[in-house]
Amino acid sequence: MDGKATMAMASMAVNDIGPMLTATEVADMLHLHVNTVKRLGDRGELPFYRVCKRGDRRFRLQDVLRFLHQNR
Image 1: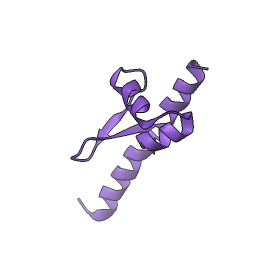
Image 2: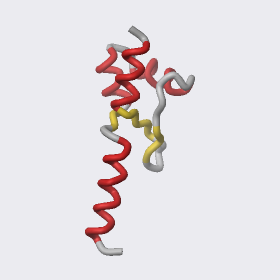
Image 3: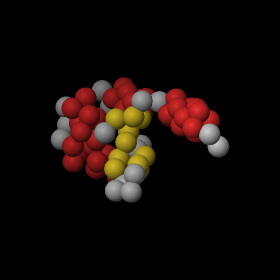
Image 4: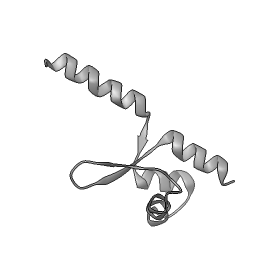
């Protein structure tokens, strides 16, 4: 596979998932502590994805907005 095909596949995957946020960005957005955001993810209240070898969490903007709307 050439470089252009690889880039097209990578950008397609990102576009399908949508914008991704770190736990810190979500915490700032929701005015919560970062540990609270992680705990919400662990309890299944706020879906997240694991990325890279370290297993960092990434949250979809769409999921965060849905959570915010449901918990007003």
